[in-house]
Length: 390
Image (cartoon, rainbow, N blue to C red; front, side, top):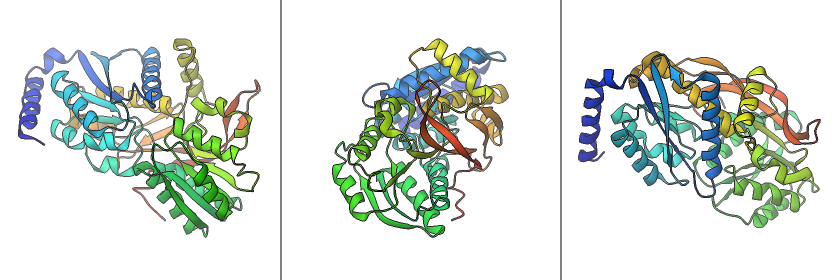
């Protein structure tokens, strides 16, 4: 950290410590999200879910009023994320940080939050290593190992013995590939080819041809949710890989925000993930109804439920520790609650969520809408990238 920044943070911390009584009635939470560009949907979903959480739970915790302050990272941009975190901590004097869709953005602030002792709640960024980079990271979202390995185990149990992996070539994609491969090969499966695709690619035809040439039982894919994921699934359908006997296996590739646009060609696609808006529980029903009442055009998906749970973690840290960052981190270790996705716990060692992973298939509900229907549950899965038994 630069000496000037170090000194600024130290000065801010000193002021916060000496004026804690004056600020005790207001807790500021800085949320760094993409609110513009191709991944702007995340910013919308995060803010809507937090509003739904506050609608249900109020805007106060004890004597504290909770204020969320949003900043636009514009996408995968580590320098911008670091600059925004500095601004929020030094100028806005936030007590907590949240958000962070992309792994590089989260890693870029690790040193900063370590120095400022700012509890930082990861709403999405899904590479396992993140929580090891700072003691002030807490992640109630998911990791790619956590959902990819159960997908591999399900595939093996259902007669799939050869697979081509096709992932976006960046941290989470490599984690997804590694997690799936480790579990699949440990169970006796064969990876026929490992394809890594440029993050920004929109032309998937050459990759589909490589998959066809290998003629595996299935292709396992991971791409960041958004235009690239939509394009890959569309290309899988247009190139008739299913007709060639190649099943589709994935994680979030049938995300609710693009599912209807994929149309009936998405029926039967199989994924392993930690949330479906079709999940049946009282907690999810309340979340969905509140979100729909506040934002009639909102689509509930993994990103929105992660922000909703992220708000819950922040509320509980404030309830336990107010503005005391180290105490807040200690308070959240081992915390359990019933989320709209099911039962969850923050692992006291990794500060990452342990949760159910659901095997889903794209189906239609009674109204004829496409949904990710859960049909099998893998209970209480930790971050397998940090607790690797393969």
